Every structure is written in structure tokens, then in C-alpha cells.
Length: 129
Image 1 (cartoon, rainbow, N blue to C red):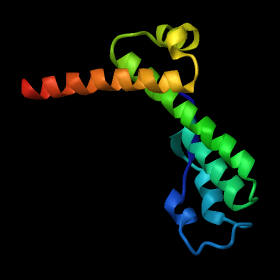
Image 2 (image 1 turned 135 degrees about the vertical axis):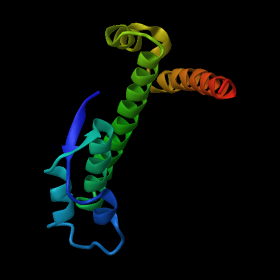
Image 3 (image 1 turned 90 degrees about the horizontal axis):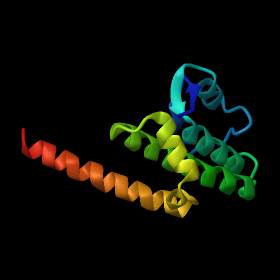
């Protein structure tokens, strides 16, 4: 999973209503220049918001948001596969080469399958405590 580094203000401080100074958005600059580690999907969502709010470029905003969803789904799939004993290379290979994982829609379906398995295992484990 690719992580980006952020620090400073929280996302809510620069996305809050009433923040009309989009040209010099200091909290956003502080957030992006510091030390908080966030997944790539978060960075893509922030880019989508910037395209939408600062530049009114709806096309780029949609592309960035769609990419963020795809990256996040893939990241969750990898985490669940690793949790169930697959090596990182096996999980990557399965996602890239298995026809059942081709396309975003299929990846989301497989994520539902893995999540259901995980939820079932967690509920069974909690019954044994």
C-alpha cells in the first residue's frame, strides 16, 4: 500500500464551510507538508476536492474520486488477503491476473466476499471468548 505524508491541520479545518480563501489555503498546505501518513486514496480524494473547489474542474475531480475508490478497494482486498495467510506477492498476483478480480465492479464483489468471510470469522471468534 502506498502512503502519503501529511501533517498540521485536519481535513475538516480546510473543508469547513466558510473557508472562502481557496487561493492561500494554509491549513491544506500544512496538512500536505508534514508527517501524518495517509493512504494514497486519501490524497486522491483531497486532489478531487481541490479540483472541484479551487478550480471548478469537475472532470478531473470525478476522475480523481473514481481513482480513489479503486485504490481504496484494492488496498482493502490486499489487507484481507494478507490477513488470511496469502503472501503479498500471491495477493497482488491474484488481483492482477485472476479474471474474477478484473474491473472495479468485480473487485468490489470480491471485497464483499472477503469482508463477509472476515465478519463471519470475527463473530464466531467473539462467541468463543
